[in-house]
Image (cartoon, rainbow, N blue to C red):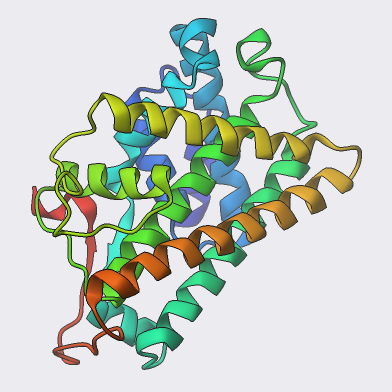
Length: 276
């Protein structure tokens, strides 16, 4: 009964999707425990909300990437990030490089699934006409969810390599978004690597990165299932390449192999905003 109620609520056309609701939905879609049906349903809901949001923002905000960037900033604190002990428990005791390998594989599977789902949805409706160069809002949804999955991956890789980012949810979100936009790991000893808010340069990098991912998502508009296949393959390859760059940086920052969990008895999941 609860599942049916949730399904009906998700399918209802939202009257006015605010940025907070969008952020929460993107964060939920970043989780790696969604089945195919749930992911597809939530993507459709996100696309409807994005269509409404894009109309309010206007072509200028959308075309320059500002809209997508601001939505990612809103979503970042809602992305579920597991600590090292929880990751160790969730992945059957894997540690060190093996755990990092597993996280990359799971994230690659997730972005692959989003690419495939985006391809399947792309022909359904064009919810944001000229605002997204006539591309459907489904592609914007795919872009945001892929970005959120990769931000989650980067944050958890920092946990694995012992590069802990402290602070409020907003501060941690800003740090990991900057890391994702620049495709670099965070070095706590480097001046300016940790910031409580995204500065002008970081926001510019974020907008450019969001537009590149959006451009990649356009491949899902190929005819029939070729778009879904192409989008899935490109997403997987891009996620793996990003992870390789960040892991190389984190190995240098950590000054050695990834540490083992300090307390196997401690369990828990936290969100970026849990420290707020």
